Length: 404
Image (cartoon, rainbow, N blue to C red; front, side):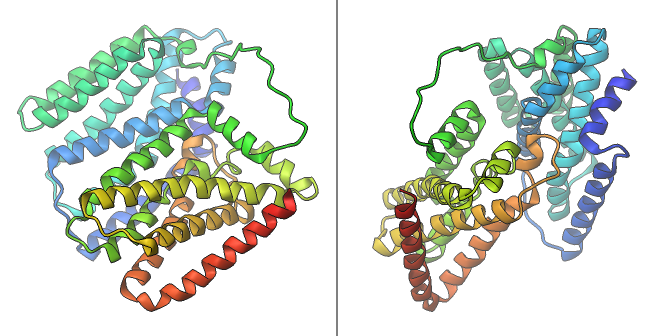
C-alpha cells in the first residue's frame, strides 16, 4: 500500500513533494494577509459546511475523471496488486491532493474573514473528508448513477436541515464509514473509463474547420459543457443578488463575473497535440486563433444575453447601450483569453483539475471587474470603449473574410 500511495502522490505533488509545500506556504500567506487586513464577513454555519462539501466534491470528481489518472490506473491494475492495497492508496492520494491544494484554499479564506470555534472548524474538515470518501464511492458505482444522485441529494438535505443538531457530526462520520464499506467492495477497474467501442465512421469533409473540432472536443468532454451550462444558470440567478444596486453598476459587474468560464478558455493548454499542430504548421496562428476567439465570444455573449433577459424580467430598464456593453465585455474577455493561451499557455500540470483551478483563470475576470468598476464610476470612458469595440469587430471581420 505504501508503494502504491507513493506512486500516485509523487505524480500529483512532485518527486520531493515540492508542489505541496509551495502551495501550503502560499495559503498560509493568504490566510495571514486577510487576517491582518481585518476584513470580516458573516457566514452562517450551514453555508460553511455546504461550501466545504461542494468544493471538495467537485474537485475530487474532476481528479477521478482525469484522463491522465485513467492512463496511470490502467497501467497499475495490470500489476498483481490486491484490491484494498490499490483502492485505498489511490483514494488517499487524490483525497490529500484535493484537500490540501483546493479545499484548504477555501477554508483559509473563510477562516480568515470570519470567526469560528474549533468545533465548527472540525465539522467543516469532517464534511470535506466525508465528501472525498463519498465522491469516490459514488464514482465507483457509475453504473448506478441514480443511486448516487439520491445519496448526494440526501447528504445536502441533511446538512441544510440537521446542521444544528448535536449528533450532526456523528451522522457525517457514519456517512463516511458507509462510503468506506462501499469502497471495500470496489477494485481498480471501478475507477477506469470504458473504452469507446463505437466504430461509426465520421463524415469526411473536404475542408478543415476549427469550429467542427471545438464542438467535437466538447462532445467528448461533457464536463466542459456542464460548466458552461452552470454559467448560463448563474446568469439567470445573478440579478437576485443585485436587487438593491443600480443597473449602471450591476450590469458591467455581471458581465465580468460571467466571463469566468475556465474550461473553454484552456483548450490549448489541455491539448498539447493541438498546440504543436497550430504552432508548427504555417498559417495556423490566424486560422485557429480567430475561430477560437469567436467560439469563446459566442459562449460569453449567450451568458450575457441571458443575464440581460433576467434583469429585464426582474427589474426592467435594459436598453441598447447595455446590449452593446454585453458585446464589448464578451469580446474583450474572449480576446484576452486567446492571447493568454497563445503567449502564456499553462505548461506544468498533472491532472485537468490543475488547469481548471490555475490562478491564471482569474486574470481575465479580474481585469473585466476592474473595467466594470471604471465604467460604473467614470461614464466618460464609455466612448473610447465603443471605439475599441468597433475596431476589434472590424479586425475580426477582415480576418474571417481572408480566411474564407
